Length: 310
Image (cartoon, rainbow, N blue to C red; front, side, top):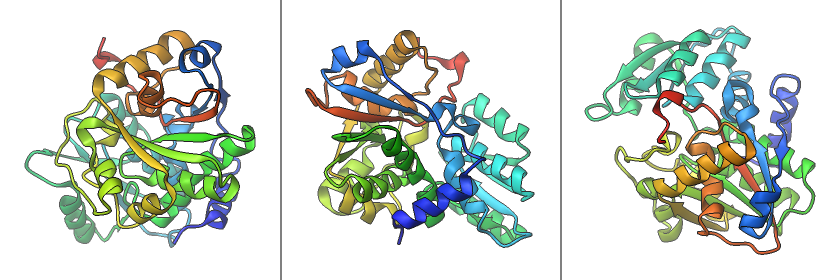
């Protein structure tokens, strides 16, 4: 399906287009967690999230002249919109009507058309399929797509080049594109490095799927981590996660908020709730790795400042 060569090829396509994002450390974080923690800051990526990597990789491989449709609560929407703008590809985004205003506004500014829907009465997949058929568009889903997974895997590929000999890599999980790609890259480059996915407790479908071996679902989960409000893992991401990820854990919204605020106040990094997921598991003590070298992926920084929980 997707291998390390696909991720390396994606990195070549992204060279000079995607940012090589910084790795930040903090003595205060290390003291609090009892470990050496390395934050891969995808909040510095174009569109403010790792999603640009997969979006550009996928769109760059489409036939010329193909219009694109996707569905997303925000970051993938912005990424597809920007990638489409760079490549001259028209983009249509299906977004829930309660998606953060900052993400809706940015998506339009990148040149995409948005169709809003009520997530309580409509499923984005059904609406997207209908619109794509009516308009003759190619659907590029947010995570369950080989080129998306390969593009997202460049996050971990870069991190392992920047930080030597990590013992553990923590990644947030919604639909599993980032976690899948990160696991593929990590197990190819650092087989002994453990990969752990972190999910909101209210949207624990991936954790339940991982533990039971059967694909589990969740309907419109109520969590502050809007980037992880996915109904399930995908047909591609589920088997990759089952095979290559070492464990899955959940954290509640209170822990996410506390971890996010700590990063804002002490590290001066603007992160969104989903972006703070992986660190929340460390900060709260849900996961402990005394004396270990721990990579933490901050997936994005597109927070709606007007709706901050504090």
